Amino acid sequence: MRSPFRRRDDRQSVDYGRDVLAGDWRRRKTVPVVDAEPDLVVEDADGGFCGAVVGFEADAVVLADRHGQTRLFPLVPGGFLLDGQVVTLRRPQRAPAPPVRRRTASGSVAVADSPAKVARASRIWVEGIHDAALVEKIWGDDLRVEGVVVEPLSGVDDLVAAVDAFGPGEGRRLGVLVDHLVAGSKESRIVERVTSPYVLVTGHPYVDVWQAVKPAAVGIRAWPDVPKGQPWKEGVCAALGVSDPAALWRRILRSVHDYRDVEAPLLGAVERLIDFVTDPGE
Image 1: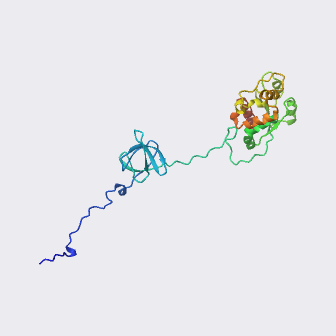
Image 2 (image 1 turned 180 degrees about the horizontal axis):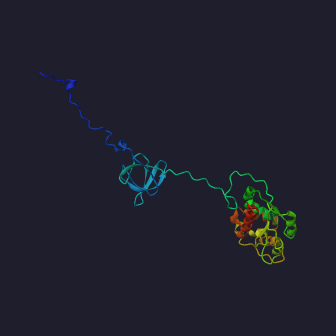
Image 3 (image 1 turned 90 degrees about the horizontal axis):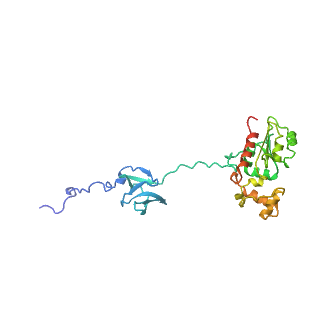
């Protein structure tokens, strides 16, 4: 009689089929990694939602379908289909931004960590302390790098004698900035008497350097018209209701931040002087 109990060796083997993980294609092969650039159209591998990349939130990508509906999907490995191929999306890896080049108030590229040079023998003269302060406000960084000193005069009535006393020559150039340098003016007649090739005189058409600052920067519609024969600064103060010219000048100077706050004739005149006194052929 056959025993009702089978020996262990007599048991039939049980076929459990293939590896239970074999059906998970995301585990079976290398999945390409794709940058989720804006407007890239992909499909969610699990749910079938198809849409374009429109943004990110934490570790998830935001997709928008053709109807404008948006959904959020985690950036998991093999979580998306691109043109029918399984891919892993990641946030785009941006190259480091290039260093921002700092610019001086004059608009030129700042020279990093550059100490001021020893002063040149060459000089730039301006008519007064307000002119010097305005030039320093805009071109100070450039002038220190070049080793150029700006010196104020007390007007230009004695310009010819001052130039002779300076003794311009090779390696000792002189640039002069003159207010109200227009044809037929007293200033133009004085400048005509300066003939040294080592001296360059430039100027602007404004009665005073205050007027070279754009009215909008100061917060006024326009510079007031001052009747001929009346001191210009005092006339401007009276028209603007300011009793102290010094207070108005402080307001004007504070309003100047860079070259965009002053008129083009002043910019051109000063740039020409800087180029002249720093000419490598001097």
